[in-house]
Every structure is written in C-alpha cells, then in structure tokens.
Length: 62
Image (cartoon, rainbow, N blue to C red):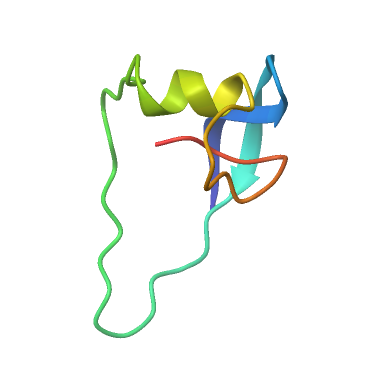
C-alpha cells in the first residue's frame, strides 16, 4: 500500500512524498488518518537537528 507523508530529509529540509506502508501483521491494525498535525515542540526541534534522540535522516515525523 502507498501513502503520502511529510519526510524530514535533512536538518531544515522537508519533502512530501509517497511511502510504502507494510500490511499489518497478525494482532496489528492499520488506521487511516484523515487529519494530522506537527507539534511545534519535538518535531520542530527534530527538523532543526536539535532533538537528542533523532534516529537519523530521512525520517517521518509524528
């Protein structure tokens, strides 16, 4: 399945792109989000490269 996502590709660089969403495993549930938002705290620190536990680039926030 394909979905659209905001992707942080590098500090202060954002793209919107299509991503592959894996099929849910047994015991998991796939939920469609109609609306989402980005927190002005953690996500903006992550985008700026200032969040200590950032897993690496590129990443999908949220």
